[in-house]
Amino acid sequence: MATLAHTSPSQKQGALTPSRMLFLALWLSLLPAELFTAAATALYLYYIVQTGKVANGLATKIYLPFVIMAGYAVFLGSHNDRYDLLKDGWYALKLCVCIGLGCLIGFTERDSVAGLRALVTFSFLTSAMVVVFWIIFGNTPVAPGETESGVRLPLVAVAAIPVLLERLKGAHQGRVLVPAAQLCLILFGVLVSDSRITIISAGVMVIAWTGSFANTRKAAIGVIVTVAICAAIWQLLPEYTGGPLTVATKLRRSLDEVLLTDGFDPTQMLLNWRGFEAFNAQLMFDQSSFGRKLFGHGLGAVVDLGISVDLGGDEPRRYLPILHNGFYNILIKYGLIGLAIYVVAVARLAFMGLAVPGRGLLEDRMLRGMVIVILLSTAVITGLYNKSVLHSTAVFTGWLIGILSHYRLASNGAAMSSDLPTGVSVSSRRSVR
Image (cartoon, rainbow, N blue to C red; front, side, top):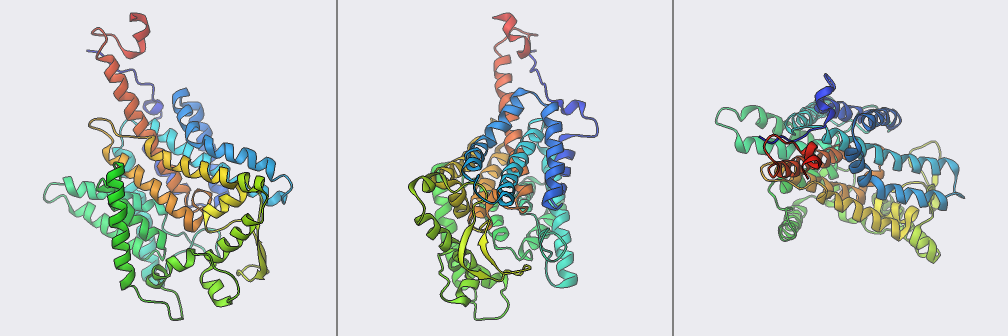
């Protein structure tokens, strides 16, 4: 019979199997951003050496648009503060390292079962940590680098939801207890995470699991249904009338917060802080030259708020080096050209995997859901340019592309092998031409 030549280094890694490396990378994402960058870069360099040109070419293809953006933004930002410029460059570097590392780990995996199991285990354990913290202290941990110590529920935890739903769907009677318990704990962790984007992302991944984003028609229907459901739920949420902001009131106020808000009313300015940031970013964009509108002000650019605001630091801040609204953040630093590159580059990730007959259907649906999660998070927490929240999300998105690309390559190789004489492998195809 014909055989398919397989050049994946996973068979030679011993204890360093791709699934274990994925598990390690996900846990490393909980480290402070500086330590994670160093560790992830070391792992990425290791995989660059271990993998071949095909895998490295695929990884480069994924993050090349972001490299192009950073390349011209460095030149345009040469007059900006050096510290802010280097910091923005670091964010761009982390983005590339995360996606590249995840892609190479996924590409060296022969089957997704072990990797998805690693994802579920990571999501279950981190959800358990958040729930325990909530039970003991009545609130949830915060992200690394903030005032309190701890770690917020990683956004990638919602990616485990389709995996567990699929297990429940195909489980025989009596084998539903474990996946059901895992799913319930993760969902409870999402609810007590005190994060609107995490709750919304969980809903997106459930919709993705149903296949609603499989094609344009289904995606349009899925978006319409999602908007209708969100509108109905929004009407049931309590309005904010003062006091502490709960998750329910935050969800109710989500639309107000993202709309442009001026600073004439100090109360509204603070309540709608994201909108206030975006308002001043829009003013900066409107007052920019045509060239700056196209290509931005470069890495290190800051937005002038017009007034000094106490943001809880050592002293009031007037100039913001990064914005919650990632689209405006990109618009200011990279311009309209950069914004278009970012949206297209992220959207095309959904089509860089694609399932093959009999393999990868779930992974392809998950990938499309993760792309939507990234775009949604860009509107509220800076997306892929966030300091730490999307580390694991970027790694896992790259992993999905890597494993799906491996499936496609194996499928194409098997198809070619079937046309060769018996006993001749794909690797020797040239010799039989």
